[in-house]
Length: 309
Length: 236
Image (cartoon, rainbow over all chains, first blue to last red; front, side, top):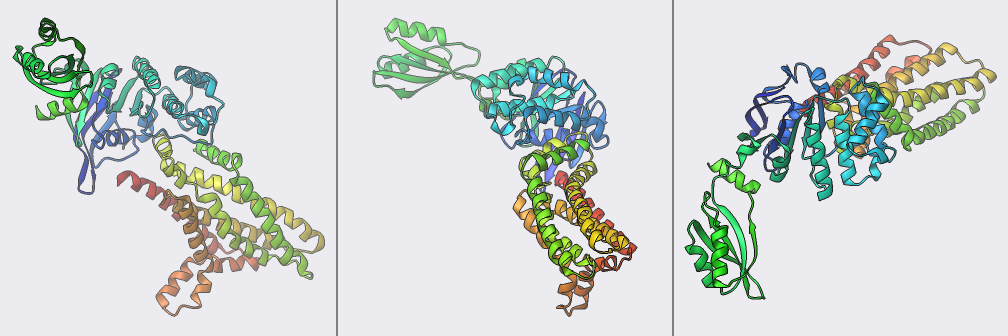
């Protein structure tokens, strides 16, 4: 469906992206993961025809965006990082404008109502875009990308700056879209790609450093398990007790609380879950555990492990 | 392309810009017409009126062209139209036509209205009048193309407006400036770009095909440059 071959974009002497290769199958939801400035937006801009590449090819259905811009652009719905909204229009006028712009031939009224239904904009259709909150504006942007029912949908950081409820809504929406569209989305939030995407492409400094199925990506995370435990009792004895448990690599004090309890940062070997032995050891000594929380895989961890290993 | 044209027209007439333009246009043109044509008494001369209409463009054209491209860049909506299945030429021409509809429409309507008292109280030469109208329409087209081009260079609409004012002033008064310059090379350049000096023949009732071709080329050149600017932005 989508094919990127040796794609390179140079700004002066600096490479924004450097020899990127990947392909996306029909119906896949692919997450583009990377820190800011890694080249996510540049890649997307080239694929949508907004920017031109220095060298390499970006193709959809075997057609190069530079050689067949009209045909390729018709297949794409794009939501840039900042939704391209005309603030002086109502939502309905805006969607109608895009409908005309894309020269759609679906039944207009019905199509726009369907989209408004999908992104939950039905009650807002007649409001001016400038009066809408950020979350609603984002939805209008998404709605705009859906006009014309394009086969490929490209979202650049679709949940950026939204509140948690809106983030969940938008994620569910993207999951639904993935059922009959090919979706590429970029983000720097790991939990986002984990919950939505079939596949994750990690990009760093303009290069692809990992391209894996979502369920494979966590095993790519080599390194120790980590958790933070807060225990009520004598500080040094607790630390020594935990250290003696098989599999524990290191224990360090992180916070001492006024009530006499202390929290420790514990690292253990990847294959061994030490939480149960720790629990029994604390119970034996009569030191109550107040909390225990695993420190999850962060984007930084994934990066460090992928780039380093 | 039609979608973009419609959206620009909508922008003119749902906001204040279109109405302000039309109001200024009719108020100022009527005042000029009154003081230079009607009250002059004896003859039905109108060439001065049209000369002033050209000068009026200095203020009016930037008003409608300053936001034409710069606003899209500033609001990032250029990402929408440049990733839509519309060609760059289509985008540039649609925006040009929208601005031109506003200018040309107001000018043609005002010219028809002002012809009525002229024909009632005098005997104006229809051909000369028509020639002048066509000349101003062509000059207006060139200025709008200039305005659109400058608007595509910046995301600051006021910078676009001032730039457009400066260039239009230069194009109009190139011949006047020329009389103060002794360097032959610069004089040549200035007379090459002079818009107003080429207009003179129209006021004598002659249709100057060279000037006609010149104005059309000027418009085409600036529209072409605008397309190139958009293209270059993708490549840089």
